[in-house]
Image 1 (spheres, rainbow, N blue to C red):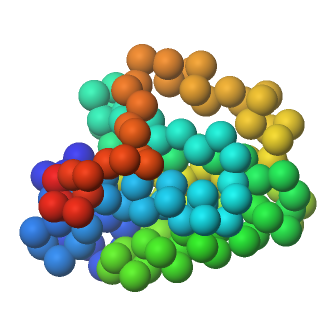
Image 2: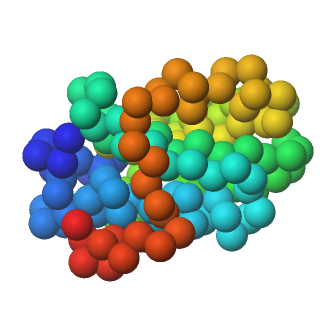
Length: 141
């Protein structure tokens, strides 16, 4: 959905409208989660499967403290790119937090919740983005 309109929140736009491209946001979120030792980080490209978003970033945190740390790191990293979430869901003790950046949705799970909901299985037709070596992000692709 990189052909959307500019907004002050979220990530709409191909990057040329002052907001970062959704792929860059997804990779930044994955890298921020990794920096806070989140586990099982996966970026799914769901853009061809659903129309409401381009990427799901999935990760697991082993404690409620780590969940909070990962969420803060992701928000800080993406804020530095010029975007902020349009919606934030989850609460203290919740095993699943969601940060909605419109074209990118970041899911931070507890261990049990990640296994139970198994979004990778649900979205198994989605290509997995190699966020650790994604060289295109530097160019804004």
